[in-house]
Image 1 (tube, rainbow, N blue to C red):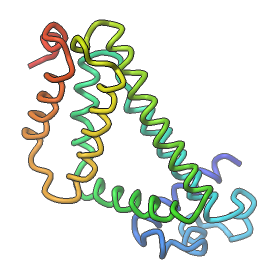
Image 2 (image 1 turned 30 degrees about the vertical axis):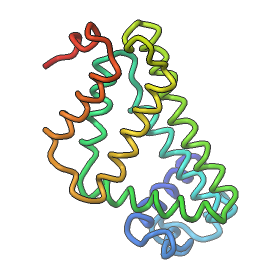
Image 3 (image 1 turned 90 degrees about the vertical axis):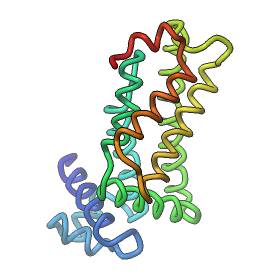
Image 4 (image 1 turned 45 degrees about the vertical axis):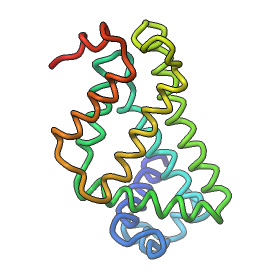
Length: 193
C-alpha cells in the first residue's frame, strides 16, 4: 500500500518537473505511475492531497540530509546547498514557486507549505541553539538571530539559483563570510581550510 503511494508521489514529481503544476493532470500522473485513475483514488482523494503529500515528503527528505550538530557539519550543510545546483535545482525551484502560488487558493496546500517552512526553520533554530549551548556562537548573538541569518542565506541561494549562481569558489567564500559573522574565533579554527 505504501509502495503505491510512493510510486504515485514519484510520478507526481516527474510530471511537475516536466509539465509544471498547471499542466500536470491526474491523468498524466496516472499514466506516469502506470496505474488507473481508480487506483489513484484508493490512495489519494484529490490532486490537492497528492500535492500536500509531495510537499511533506520533500520536507522530510530535506530534513534527513540537512541537519548539523557542530561547526564543520554547519559549513558542510551550507556548502552542500550550492552543490544541489544546476538545471535540476532550477527546475525544483520553479516547481516550488508554482506550489507556493497554488497555496494562495488551496487551503490544504497552504497548510502543507506552512508546515514545511516551519519544520525547516525549526531544524535550523534547534541546530543553532545546540551550537550556542556549545559556546560556538559569537557573544551577544542569539541562536534565533543566527538561525534567521542562516535561513536568509538559504533563501538567497534559492533566488540566486534562478540566475547566474556564480562559481562554487564564490559560494564557499560567501559561506565562510557568513560563518565568520556567526561563530567565535575558536569555533572558526575548528574548520578545515
